[in-house]
Image (cartoon, rainbow, N blue to C red; front, side):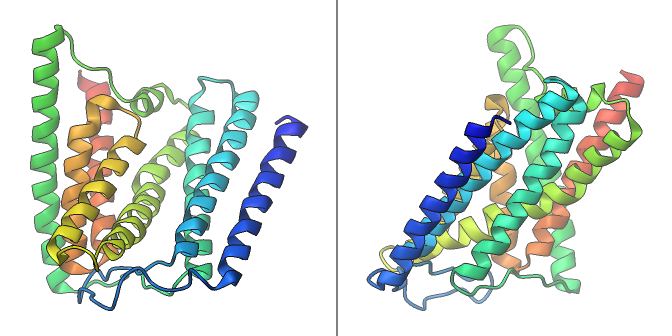
Length: 279
C-alpha cells in the first residue's frame, strides 16, 4: 500500500466522519422520516438524515479500506491467487460486520431479530426448499436462454473458479467458512436487517404500507444481486433476495434468513465438489 494512498484514505475518512458529526450536532435533521407505523415483525427502521449520512460514510470507509487490503494481499500472494481472493473475502466480510456494529452504536436504536422457535423453524425449512427450487429453476432457465441466443453457456462466477483452483487445505477451510458463516451473517444483516427495513421506514409515511414493503424489498434485492458482480446471475440472485426478504418479513427472524442463506451456499459448495469429482 502506497503511503500517499493510505494518508488519503485516512484523511478522507476522518473528514467525512467529521461532517457527519457536525450534521448530527446541528439538530435540524434529528427527526424521523416516518411515524410509528411499524410491523409487528420486521419493524421499519426510522432513520434520520444524519443516520443515512453515517451509513454512506461507513460504506465509503469500508470500500476504501477493502481496496487497500486487496492491493496488499495481491502483493503478498499474487493477483490471481485463490489465497488472496479468499483471505480478502474474509477481511471484507469482517469489515462489513464492524461497520454494522458501528452503525448500530451511533444511529437509532433497533433490534436485529435474533429469534427462533418451532414455528419459525418450520417456515425456514419450507422457504429453504422453495428457495432451492425457484432459484435453481431460474438459473437453469437463464443458462438455457443464453445458450439459445449465443451458442455457449455463461461463464461461472469468478469465486467458483478460484475455489476450484484452491489447493491449500487452510485456504479451502477459509473459503468454506466465508461461504457458510461470514457471508450469510454479513449479507443478511446488511441487506435484510438494515437496508430493507430502513428503506421501508423511509417511505412508510408517504406511501401505502404494502407499497413501501414492495419498494424496499425490490430495491434491497436488486442491490444484493448487483453486489455479486455477475450480470448472468442477476435474475436468480434477485429472486433469492426477494424470497429471503419475504421470509424475514413474515418471521421477523434474521436467524431464519441466515440459516436459509447458509444452507443454499452449502448446497452450492457440495455441487461444486461433486462436479469436480464426477464431471
